[in-house]
Image (cartoon, rainbow, N blue to C red; front, side):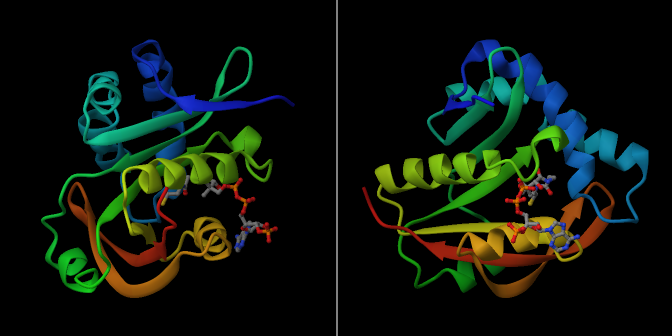
Length: 180
Ligand SMILES: CC(C)(COP(=O)(O)OP(=O)(O)OC[C@H]1O[C@@H](n2cnc3c(N)ncnc32)[C@H](O)[C@@H]1OP(=O)(O)O)[C@@H](O)C(=O)NCCC(=O)NCCS
């Protein structure tokens, strides 16, 4: 299998929205209704939102692809967090950015695509002189927690995360970066 990881382009946004709609439910714990999930996808993962992520300086959006399909994507978010939990737990973390999304098509789980996307996002953060990467992940998402643990993201707190009208129990995880 050959794969390429690079920054996303405007031409990717429709395929990104399709991939995001397929993969977002995989990260949701029991308790979410199809309507709730669909609402989140409409608000956060539409082609219009992906175009914003591609074109705004606030983000680095990268994709993994083979010759004719997207295999996964990742989004680094450099906007200052307004979240009081994040601000207090990261008050001594230097400059920090969020590894906001990391999703791989199920056909490619366990194939090293997630590692490549993770490394691209962290390299982009280091180039932007970030000291620390942070993320939230649902406590019941065993596969993702295992992946982040082996990727050096340690749990520093429990965190509530709202998806529509459901409040999930997440972990706040952080990892130090080597600046580029
Ligand atoms: C999270 C994700 C990006 C990780 O990519 P991946 O290719 O599946 O990751 P890997 O296979 O390298 O690592 C997962 C690890 O969890 C292990 N694992 C799999 N199922 C598991 C389970 N139910 N419980 C605990 N560990 C599990 C795997 O064996 C592997 O560990 P290993 O390398 O020691 O064998 C991918 O699974 C994904 O896109 N999931 C759906 C979307 C998602 O949850 N995204 C994260 C949102 S925060």
